[in-house]
Length: 266
Image (cartoon, rainbow, N blue to C red):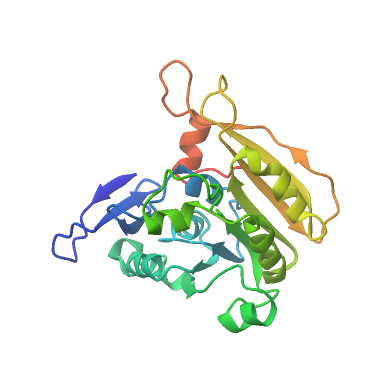
């Protein structure tokens, strides 16, 4: 990730402009006090196949990291960023207007709404049924009792309700076309809740563990599933982020984080 000041503005202390995928896209993000994109977003975005050419919807988009990463890696993809927080929507709009993203801007739209809305309320808010080919989500998966994120804006992005997976996956099932795919990233401890929420709507789940190093337990899981499928879950080969000997990125992790490879080799 590269960090610079926005050349189109006076120097500002409340935001940064950060480059990702080796400068192929840029995010305007809160300098402090809000959610800032990191490896989770880039790993999740890589769950889309490299040749993806449909409509991808980024649930809980924040400043737009996942959606921008999909658009940058998949030149025929169209992206809808969906975010509830007015503050983070403003950062997503600043990101879209950044000159470094001019090559992507025509393929990205932004919708401010709550992805947990149901039925007619969801449709009225602009999330149309059967309109998407792929939904990506990085739900707030910290427990409410976790007080490690005291800032309100950051807490909203990190701390979820007990029904967050059920609510978000219900909306994903409605928004997706038949046989469309959903992908999400979460802590391994959330796997049971995720599989329960997928049941009846999605099948053929692929579960990919993410390790900091192979000598430590997995720190994340990426789960990808198909709308309307009935296949059993599969455990996929893991992504290992760092080499044991020097903690540098593995070649596979470097390729994924720089937007040069897909997570599931498709």
